[in-house]
Picture: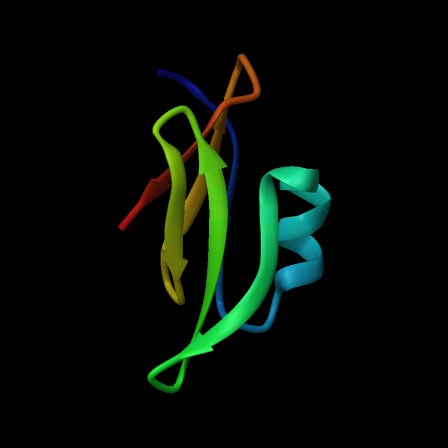
Length: 66
């Protein structure tokens, strides 16, 4: 898989993540003091933690690098 776009989720950049992922990402929520997102991937919804990198491939599919 070749990455087309990447963005690291910082906990404060939801709007930038939303621009890249559109409706595939749900609004951030707080879990044990950390900001997290839910992202729809080929494997279903996965959690995105602060510091994780969201990767979009050439087909428009998303994955998360921990």
